[in-house]
Length: 301
Image 1 (cartoon, helix red, strand yellow):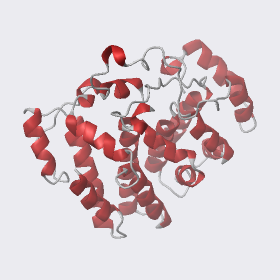
Image 2: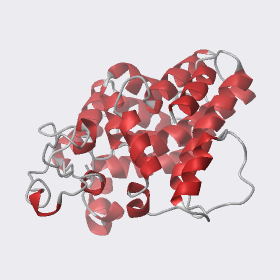
Image 3: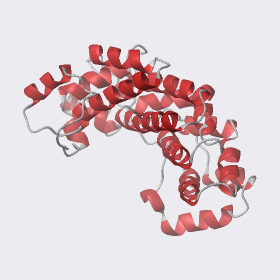
């Protein structure tokens, strides 16, 4: 797997559009091998990892559910590699995005940006600790830059979804977003007459999400030498999946104190309502609608 990532990273670090596209397809193929159910055994499936993942699959495979993925040795290997600086794919993708944004908006460049954003969303869901990247201002600023009017509606919409993915269950990232005047960026885009209807709908969804009560609810598994460090700070389903042989000896599961990357940095709904009210007039109506309809199934971190 290191060889595959090395090839992809070489292409992602290029300034040549076709090479960047190839690197993105290689990462996509690697993630597809991990996330999609295969019609053959695990041993045979593992052998397919040595092939070039950038090639198109001949037939679509159904996605696996989380327990199936976490039991997969290929996913375990991938997750472990993501904990280090050298093999973290999200970090490489944000660096690639930074170069693409600097090149400005054009047709071929836009497609590369969209592909990188889609992959970044998936990587943050597969490896939640990678979301910590966006607690740093330079990376959060990159997402806010992509919401500027210079970029097409498709990029703006995809960036909003990426932003939500980066903020879910990570209040520290939300504080970085606020400190960089992210609310001003979002509301300015919403009020602009030049903003497309589809983007405005995405922005309304984002505002509902932002106003949800924050709850750092990721359980922390008890530190164990055989479970990687970053994995212990990930959602409980992932942590338990790799606590091989834990059983009754794993005392950090059910009764562990809830925590997250942003533990101790949460804001109340009233605080966020006041912050958003500085930039938008009808916040009270949004909050009332939120309380009556409870979208997203309740509290979101």
